[in-house]
Amino acid sequence: MRLPAGPMVRGRAAHRIATALTATLLAGLLAASLLLIGAGSAAAQSDAEATTTTLTDAGAPPPHIIPRPNSGTAPQSATDPGGWAQYAVMFAIVAGVGLIAFFVVRESRRKKPPQPTPPS
Image 1 (cartoon, helix red, strand yellow):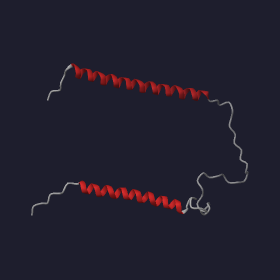
Image 2 (cartoon, one colour; image 1 turned 90 degrees about the horizontal axis):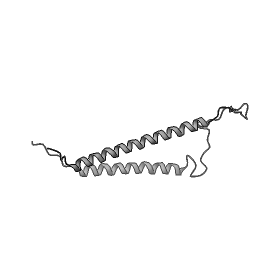
Image 3 (cartoon, helix red, strand yellow; image 1 turned 90 degrees about the vertical axis):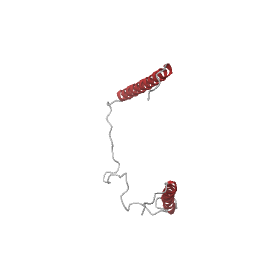
Image 4 (cartoon, helix red, strand yellow; image 1 turned 30 degrees about the vertical axis):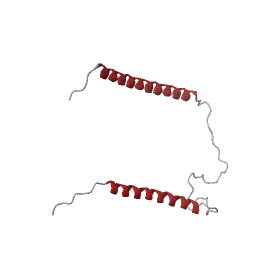
C-alpha cells in the first residue's frame, strides 16, 4: 500500500515538525528560566548569621512527632480519633470500594462472550 505523497501531506508533516519544534523550544526555555530563578534565590540566602536553638525544659525528653503507643486519650466525642464516626467513615469507604469491585466483576461477566462448548 502506497501512502499519498502530495503537497498537502508534505504540508501536514511540516506543520507537525514545526509544532514539535516549538513545543521543545518552549519546554527548554521554561526549564532554563526555572533554573535561573532557583539559582538566584539560592544566591540570595545568607550564611552570615548562625541559627541557634535553645531548649526551655532542661531535663525533659525530646518531643516526638509521632505519638508513642498508649500515650493518647480515649475519644470524648464521635469525631475524635478512634471515635465511632471515624470507624463509620472507614466502613463506608471499604463498603464503597467493595461495591464498585462487585459491579465491575458482574458487568465483565455479562459482557464476556459465551464460551464454545467442546464437542463430546
